[in-house]
Image (cartoon, rainbow, N blue to C red; front, side, top):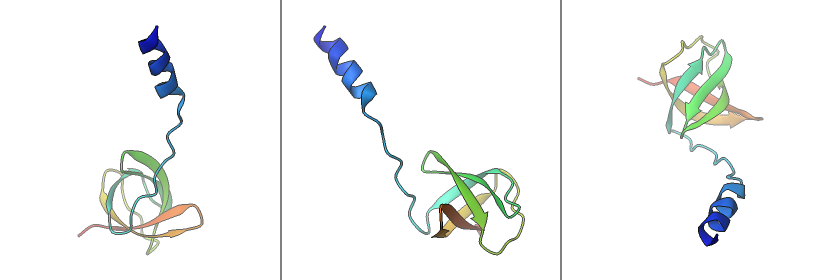
Length: 77
């Protein structure tokens, strides 16, 4: 019974997403044209291409900033 209680308590705590850091990398999940989504630190984020260029799916990008609720990204070199 003790272990069941611990398990239920652990599952009930909601994990808050942490904001990715600038200059960290991410992978494009849906084409950025210029908006789409990226996977950063194991979490899915809405992102926008910083230079408004189309970036295809599965491309590695670098986070260069934030705007409103969007990550701003550029294609990694």
